[in-house]
Each structure stands twice: as C-alpha cells, then as structure tokens.
Length: 144
Image 1 (cartoon, rainbow, N blue to C red):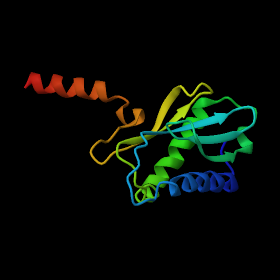
Image 2: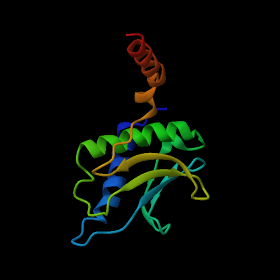
Image 3: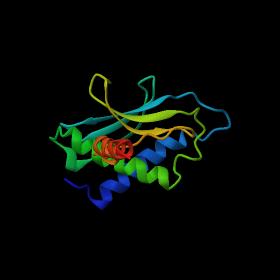
Image 4: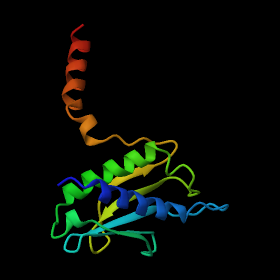
C-alpha cells in the first residue's frame, strides 16, 4: 500500500529530525541507525547503536501490517531519495554507517542504505541476470 503524501512528509521529517542530532562540530561514531516498524500500531522508531530512540513517526497505512517487504521497499526508496537530495551530507558521523530495518529483538532484517565515500553497494535488481550475461560474455570470448 503506497503512503499518502502527508505520511511521506511525516516520515521524511522524522528522518531529518534524527539527522539534525548529528550536525555537530565533533565527529560521532554511530555505525548504524536501526529502524523498527511496529506492524500492530504502525509506529516507526529510529534507534542508535545503544538502542536510544532518535525519532518516531506513526504511519497509519502500516497499522496491522507485518509486510516487511513493503516496509523495506518504501524505506529504501525514501532513504535513497533523501541521500540523493543531500540530507545526510551535513551530518558529522564517521563513515561508513548504515540504516538497517530491524525486528522487535533489534535483529537486522535488511540493510536499507549504506553510506560510505569509498564503497557502493549495488541493489539486487541491478544485478538480476548478471550471472547469465557474464557467462554469455565469457563463452563468446573463449570461442574467439
């Protein structure tokens, strides 16, 4: 279920509010931001490495839903857009760090966004069919 424009803005504002905590003169050593979605209530909470809540937002469309694939898709898309817009450029955190979707035990479900100046993580969609293309390329190369 797609999020309403108002809910998308609320989600973006919560993430931006969280990011404001890290606009400091000194570098912070956070390695991950843990995002937990309570499927019963629709509440999304972002935690730091020490399980301290940094931001919360209620997502009405996610009430009574445990669709982790939906949460992943929406959050990955929103975080990627925000990265492209430069929202995370001004925060002073030692790189690399990442945004991770977690379950109620704070166990990682999936990495949503990895931020590092030197590393680029490719999505699974980009790599679909790569094996076959590489095999075809090598086959044609070795035939010549």
